Image (tube, rainbow over all chains, first blue to last red; front, side, top):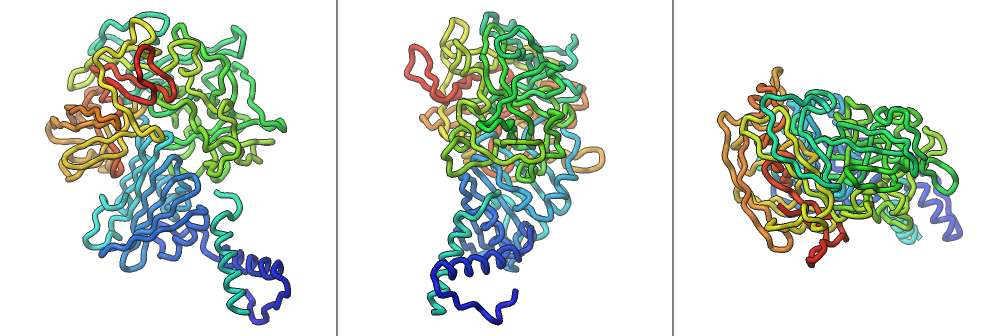
Length: 160
Length: 415
């Protein structure tokens, strides 16, 4: 972006348009996917993509960012002291955009499905990734985490 | 000036964040069959737990559903349809319709309505069509159903926002593992108000598709959404009872039972001494207490093929397949006798004793119906799947539907 010679708009409308353009450019300059395994800034991308409202809760071992989406589904992203998203969880009436939330791990999960014996929760446990998608129509919940990235003192149970 | 611009930018940022753009019958044979004397009557639909259409389904309860072009006797009976108290509405594979043509539902501008229905393990994609739906002596006519895997709307054209589930589309018999899903859970429609006009939180279940590759999310009147067929029946329309006999701990090859329509509407479907549990009316969930942990997202789901719950502490060993990969099921060295307490929002509570067997051992005996098949799940969920149903009559009452001669109105569970 070239910001060396900013416009000096005379009218509020111009200013709004200008600011919106700037912000649009700013927003689209984020990487498309950088969520599970990504850095804390990637949560901002998720929040924008999901048009959600964010709440942050700090614990001694990690920081939890909860994004409340307009559909009523909550997505929680867990950030380590090193600033990386080590786990995500979701709950609500509808599934969130899991490609957005899982980032680069989504394709890995899509490829990893095993021979199933029936319908039920989707459980995928890989050496570097654990994924659960459970619940039922109108009430889903799930979690995904990277075991090697869990901060000291944090159990998988905490990702919910 | 700079401050003012910052304020404008901040306001604009809020706007961007707040409302920016769009977003997102199989085998059945003698041997170790288990069967009672199934009920009979115009409201009694035979069901069977067996290996299903693909021949390897563990703990699937299936039935046959007849769908007809509205108002005609041009019909197709589809076997191998999963009976699912965890979803709402009938979905059948296009291939299972065997060429039966059903009217496509269109929007006001004539664009076909196509649905992206969400399940925990994947999605189904296909058009909404209308059909008369017949089971036992009951009929829902005509109602919207989903036709899955219609060649006119191939998986290659599924909108990106619908393809965002790692389970992926389940639009073939291989992926769906059944010929259809009969959703007879406690809600009337699959989506409800969130998908209806003037919604502020459209989750994107319904699409208008001028062409297969130009689908856009749309709203759908509640009456046009996929309907739980039971509440559309003329009679016996307040819920269902799933009746399955007990099975041995080692399982059974196949089990015959009944899906009874109506609760307290006839002499064969009274509540009797069944305990009634009310769930959260928005979610259908109640609470299960197990080993000191409160599972607030508990539900009874004939469409889940086992008991699925996470563990407060690691007690039950996880199964692995022949290549060492975890399968999601539990494989304790010896069967574990356990107990959990279900709690309804109405204060009803009951201890449920259950056994967790070794899933690999169970499967190796070549049986397909198990009361002790269990596996893992995400935190907070206790999914009382089909294992729970054997030896019980499980009632599912539909939202807003009352039980004659009682003060009870759905949603509720009872057993």
